[in-house]
Structure formats: structure tokens, C-alpha cells
Image (cartoon, rainbow, N blue to C red; front, top):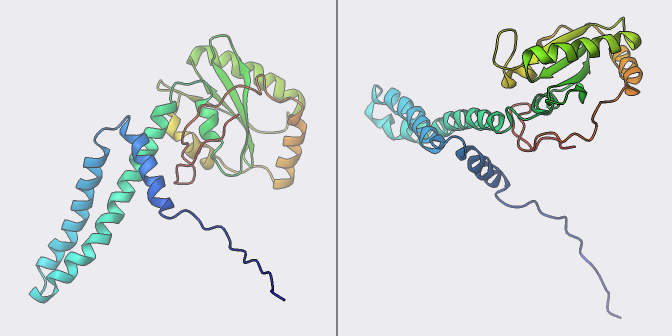
Length: 235
């Protein structure tokens, strides 16, 4: 009697996945930074050259060893520079789009983001972030117009969370604003004033408020998050 046996094999991860991701990041970045390849290669050569230069002043029998050691050093330097330019390109692709600041803020650990809690017909808007530092209102658009939106949302929040600290951030390029690339850093630098249980309670109280436009599309594309550039959340 023949035995029927089936061999289950776990699905294998695609080979060269990391290289494919780098290739996709390069293609995206090259659209707004045409010199990214040249600059990355230049920094590879710089890193490699520094190690080789150090070896040049050592005994002659170590020159080849230092030339080999210089390769991974050059690759590391090149990857750091490449990552920074990819991040800059990611911001450039969404900058100026309504909801860009909310999309960037969503990549910040420990925060719950509700996009577009206030918005006007010019598409200036305010998004709400809740975390250990309290409530942060993130405004984007015309600086003068968003101040009215901030005042309206602050008044609304005081009815449900008057005891919770409220911080206002305006994203832009004028006085009293911060750049889009600094949104995550600004959230991370705020002092923690609430306990985890208090944050949960604040989120529960504000859940009923929701957003003015929950279906508003968040800009598509890579969003920097924790040093990486994964796909941004889309709504």
C-alpha cells in the first residue's frame, strides 16, 4: 500500500528584497534629486579613500588590507547619505499637499493622530495628536487663517478635556512655524505630562469628536518613520 505524503514548505521570502527596496527608493528619489546617484557614489569613494589614506601611513604590508576594509566603510557612509536624501525627497513629494503634516505625524511612535479636525474652504486644516505630552494641534496652510481654526478647535477641546495640556504647532516656512520635516521631532521633544492611563482616558473622551473629514485622503507616498521610509498610511 503506497503512502501518500505531502510536504509542506514555508513560503520563502523574495530574494534580494532589500536590494529591491533600495532600487524603489532610488527611483522615487531620482525624480526630485537627479544627482542622488552621483552624490552617493562620491561619499562611498570618500569613505573608502579615508580608510585607504590611513593605511598609506602604515607599514606597506597593510595597504591591501586597508583597501579591503575601506569597502564596507564606504558602503556604510554611502547608505547614510542615501537614506537622508531619500527622506528629503519623500518630504518634498508631499509638501504643500493638504494633510501632509498629519501623514508625517502618523509615523511618530506613541501618538494617535486624527486628521482634519478643523478645515476651511481654502483647505487650511488642523489635525489633532494625542500622546503623553497631552493634546497637540497641528495646523497647516496659511498662517493667519489657521489661527482661527486653532482657536475654534481649542474652544471645542476645552469642553471635553479642559484639564489636558494643549500645544499648537503650525507647519510652514514663515515666522512661528516649523518645517514639515521637523514635525516628528517636535512631537518627540515635548515633555511628558500624562500617565498612560490618562492618555487612554483622553483618547476615549475625544473619540466622539472624530474629525471634520474622516475620509480626507492623506498624501500617498513614502513617509519617514523611525529612520526608515515605509509606505505612508492612507485613508
